[in-house]
Length: 608
Image 1: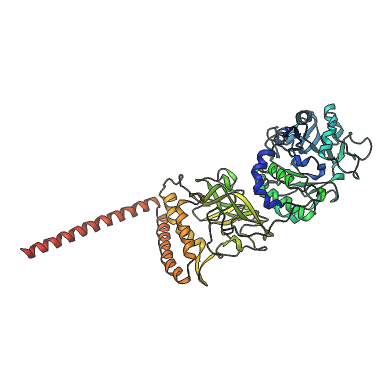
Image 2: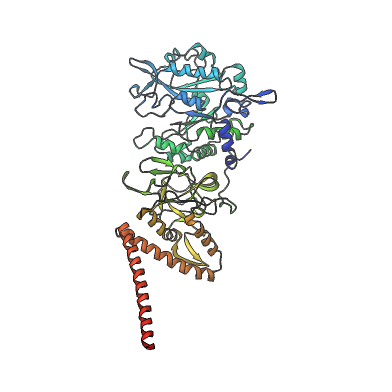
């Protein structure tokens, strides 16, 4: 079986462009049109329960449909259908004065007219003859039969009715040939195994599927696979597996910011693989909130392409390779960075991806808590990027459960340690500063994009983890000369070296918005010093000592002067410094001229 993780970087762009939005359009091979079943030719000969479906949780509950109390999505389920989602979890209920509606528990929070939703599904199936759509209805208020009265004959004609749990599911090709391309499940309603209890073509969901736990507070809880992948309902031996991949916010309501984290490619990939390892089963339904955010379509298409045809319902994803340092041949230029999929909290924009970060943004660098409440958040301006490229591909360490991704040499803080250490030294069982427990697993992932924002303190909170904005040049948090460990941490040395740059950008008020980067993506401010440092550290101990001592003295002096100026009125002190330097230089020149004039006068007197 092809390795899912190692192959992903080569497939992402091509797959996303060609198959992320499935349609009924056929591609031709010679004179014979090639079938694309739910967007991929490779899906056609697979059984319905052998592929993955991008799934919208509480699909009827959207802001655009007028839901206002805890809506789960910004855009409608009809839009999601057009974009490529093929499975929808919806709820039905009986609302006073409005009758049977699609709603979530409380009619007052918002409702959606079922007739409109069902008619839109019919239109989609009519226009996209190679697509399979699946509905799963949570029935409230014994509303299933009333809901069915709002369907049309055309809707019912598309229904596939499965004979029973002991019968294999048909392939997508077979459903397309039958033109029975709509599958409907329900739960919490009548028992559909009893004749006459349910409309024809409706199946008990948990007779055919099992689901994972679904009550999570915060996206990080999804990455605790031992608990988040627990079977909540249904038997493990059932045909389908539903992964509930959504989390609530602080108030216990659906949260867009948590969904942005949960719907990232690396979070979805980690959950699919984590649950496959624990359950021995492959996800069929990957259900999310706020479907318009994130990479759900991308991960589903990537997975379906890589799924071996013979694995069937017991397919498991391949193990991820053990983490290894990024190769020296990597085109990143030797610097260290964060993956663009990481999240930071920006003061005005809220939670954003690292790849969306811009110069001048103010990011969270410190958060103090008073019990469970936030006492104080400290934000600092991103005044520069040590490394910035949207195109360079790089290997990253990924630490679970925080899903933090950073290069092998990037510095990160551990609980109980004063100085940060390079990522390559983090081990399973270590606790990252700000993490909710020890590291449970370390993996290697490949991402496109490298990002190293610089802040005034040299600190940044990424995925909630306290990290340095700098790198280590040796496999240690501290500078070593030969076998001797110095008292200078790489974080401190880098921060001291950056002092004049910080002073120039933040205190003098210079325009650093137009800073430039080398072809490797490294800032021109640090490009040559990085190369010089790497060269120095390759020398023998004697040469290194002779070179490093003046280097350290210089950056200590730079740090001291810069910090003094920052502490004392900043721009005013800087201006006074330049005035003093200018006056001193002028007086030295005047003194030199006066001495020269006096010397010439004395010479003349002697001659006379």
